[in-house]
Amino acid sequence: MKAGGFGMLHYHDFRKTLADKGFELPNECLVLEVCNPRQAAEVLGTDMSLNMALPCRLSIYEDHGKTYIGMVPPTIQLALISDDERIADVAREVERTLEQVIDSAI
Image (cartoon, rainbow, N blue to C red; front, side, top):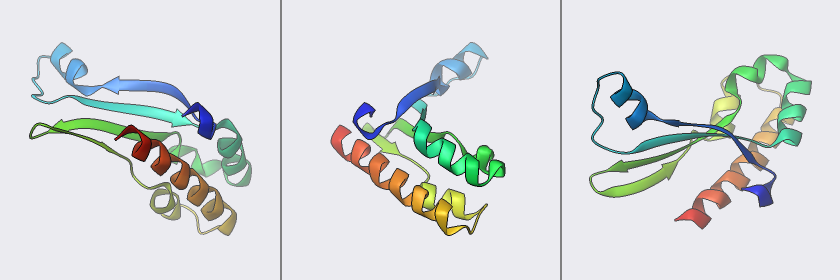
């Protein structure tokens, strides 16, 4: 991810979190919060209300013995909040980079 300018801010281990609260999750489920600082600054500098869509999240989970990696596409997520073409441009760039990260991991 470093090659794309992204870094991990935090991760959530849902299986562990739920187990700590007395609930069993049979499959692994990790959610990584990732951010490209340059792109985040560009988005927030254009429209601060888009902070609710940041950072990007990548999901790694098991289902029926297979491991999957996914994300909510930034182009779709940000389009729900903003119709600014500058935001759409950044969202497309972010999405392409994260798709490359996912593709290189599988």
